[in-house]
Length: 82
Image (cartoon, rainbow, N blue to C red; front, side):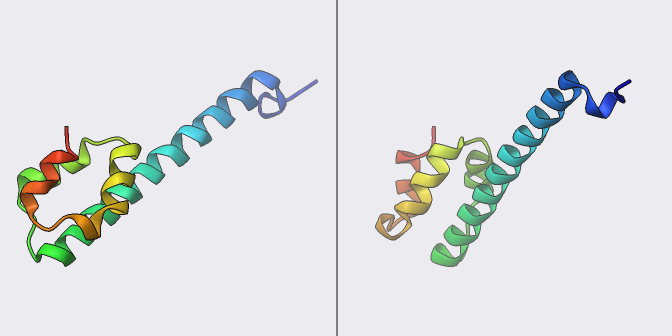
């Protein structure tokens, strides 16, 4: 007799949860990196931008990180944030 941990259904649920956890962790890391880089570049980052950055998906965060050297003013962040 199989224990619950050995059942196929349990394994699928467990793997799905692990995948979701990794995705959420990755997104949290991208948020943290984006905020840290912008603070380093501009010295200060208004709270409104921090809130908006935390609402972005992985694609937008990656775009911000990729283009950090092309952003010269905080107002240019509006082009990336929706």
